[in-house]
Amino acid sequence: MIIAATPCRLFSITSRSRASLLSISQACSRSPPTPSGFSALRLDAVMKPSSDMLVLKTTVLMVCLGALYHHFESKLAIFDALLIELEQEFIATVRRIASPDAPAWTNLVAGCHAFLDSCLRPDVQRLALIDGPAVLGPARWREIEDQYALVPVLNGLTGSMREGTVAPRPPAPLARMLLAAINEAGLIIAQSPRPREARQEAGDAFDALLHGLRRTPEGV
Image 1 (cartoon, rainbow, N blue to C red):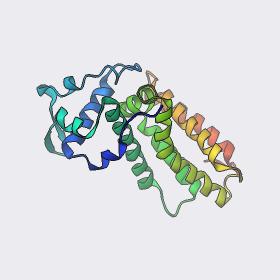
Image 2 (image 1 turned 90 degrees about the vertical axis):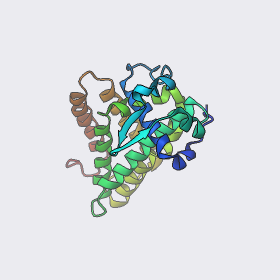
Image 3 (image 1 turned 180 degrees about the vertical axis):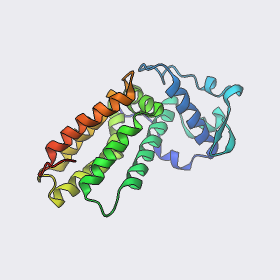
Image 4 (image 1 turned 45 degrees about the vertical axis):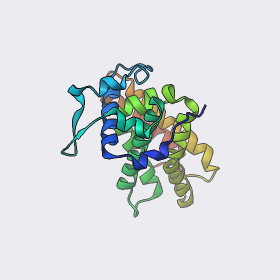
């Protein structure tokens, strides 16, 4: 199913609405680790006077429900925007750490591990990995993944094939499988009672998968 949300509105929301989104994101990350975390969240509880002031980049902002519902038609639309915010943040991180002088394979591996590092964050665990498919539904969650997360994976594989690091083959199916493996590794971290230990184990297992893709597997 496709949720009737309007993600493009995210680009024009005010700083007050962004502060509201941050407040909700923090509340979601503190909620119990069950699929009903966001569904059970009451926005008016998040916006109580005791919690309606927060510091964002040293500026004190008033958080109000009216600012949210001015831009988002439902709680699902708010969650949609939250997930897209996280995806955009990750894309920005991948672009920042990528070196124009490095092989495509090196940048691909670095980007994958940057995502696994981000899976140690409670908001990423809750919103992107645990609640995402449950709240938005698998179809909308995958649509967002395809729009944001799939692109750098596909580009990295295509570049690696062009450079000869990965054997030529249709890149799209391989990119989807690799993205699924990244998400599964992230979920292992998110659901573990010892996330840092799980990060190491999941990273090692993921590197083993990457190793198998290389034409000359002398390490990744």
